Length: 155
Image (tube, rainbow, N blue to C red; front, side, top):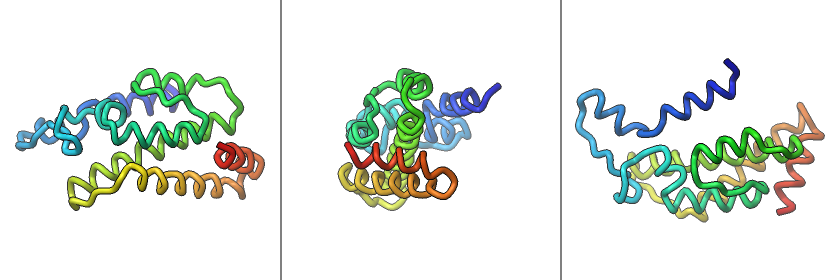
């Protein structure tokens, strides 16, 4: 089994995220999304259906020259099978990882600290993280880092 299959299998275990895990332990919790209070908190809802996370992903995806696909299976397939130059492919994967990270961080911040940020504020922070990550490639692969940075700043 390759690493991509392992990652996909782990991601596929997330459909009902934390609330179902807590419920399976016999503890009481609400399965409704704490962010919008409109739907069950599932992987697809949190990362794709929730308007807030969609705005973050779409803004970052445009900057990374990715199609802002809004369903999990289609996006995973698109990111894995995308035929484009290596810098563009890696930038797309990095952008998706950062968008997921910031969405999950916002969820936890709202849940545990009652601290709320706007999608624009998160998008700015996420873009800075992507720039920093690209810069971290400079020592090990300057050509890749340069190509990725040019893609990132040109859009």
